[in-house]
Image 1 (spheres, rainbow, N blue to C red):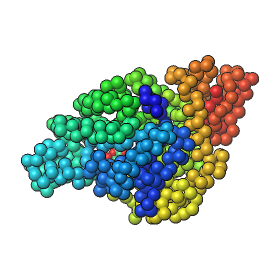
Image 2: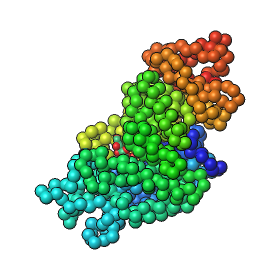
Image 3: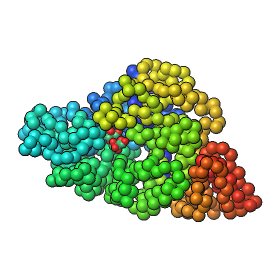
Image 4: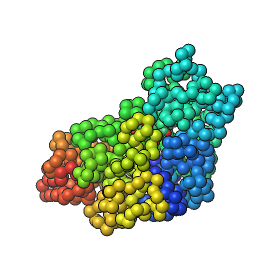
Length: 513
Ligand code: ISL
């Protein structure tokens, strides 16, 4: 595959490894399962896949608690399975991102085991240990994202820091040995020819040196940019590879500081996922994101769903209406420069699943008593037939809910109006048009209920994408002879090339070229 800056406009499909396809009937997805379904992913029309962690792990946080960064957990297969998967993905024209988790290890990682076994071990300083305060309480008031204090006592009486679960001790990035370990980990996977890394909590690595109280001091310190500078040097030794950072901040100006020529190639932009289905707010958010990231010399990313977020049709109100709104926003985002990151199952219109309390797995459900993240992690629905829905011949690690019977690949293949066919059509059109599209984006004034963006093509035509968030159809005036409707996310759009009048159905998006 040609190298270059392929990542700039790549459409990336997140595969949640535990829930995509199970090849051996143990109820948990695995690498061989993914390999068997790569044809489906390639046919969808995406450019790359991102694989969530498949490394050896006790699975206290679904694999984001790693005990060995350079191996495969036996539940998911072997390194040989990984190599086969990578080779087949490449043969199908798909790039592959793997996840790297540098903020913390598992408590069961040999580094942490050495650190708690012996205070004088050099690895003690690879983590953040502090003695208790005079009254025995934790060293400061920092909170774990998963609930409770960010400090847990080790058997020897000192506290160790964990911004996430107590099974995920934070590494000390002020120790140069930690840097060396991660350079070696990156090179291990780069040498196997992965195309990129998704960096877990890329804004977390450095904490205030003096542990000043207040949670803002536990995150997002400028010193972290030094790590990205080093990592960029490592990755630039290899052709055409990229980093995308999970910078879970809603301050877009700040997120944009994580990217650039000597920093990360891309960072997730979660702001759109938090934006309501409202044309005025969406327009402002998207416009600002584009300006910021294009100015940084890189490209924006567009995220509606992932394995941590409530699935977007549910956020948009649920049911067929939520799905319709999700398709509309997706059509708008796919018309933009930058990288859309799609999450497995969104192409089927899957909503958040209803997971009964006795089947819950996510530590945040137990520690926060909140909604938990299991509902977006239930397995892919391949076929109509229960109980396995083509995902497994065994007992799935998280249960399917009612929607699996109606929203699955088998049924949607057969229905030209399905969400699956909509995604395929939009992705095929994007691929067909994008090489000829200039990166400059126009924002013509429009009806308050509509977001309108234009991108000029090299051959002098214009792609106009219109999102209508109103509950009724809206009419817009385009240039007469502006072309024809090539995509409509729902309902029926009308364009009269003679008069230039475009009718966009309620809660839908349309492309005209
Ligand atoms: O999940 C969140 C909100 O619902 C976020 O706060 C999330 O915890 C944060 O973005 C970090 O996520 C990443 O690191 C976590 C892991 O649990 C998540 O699955 C991962 O995406 C710790 O490794």
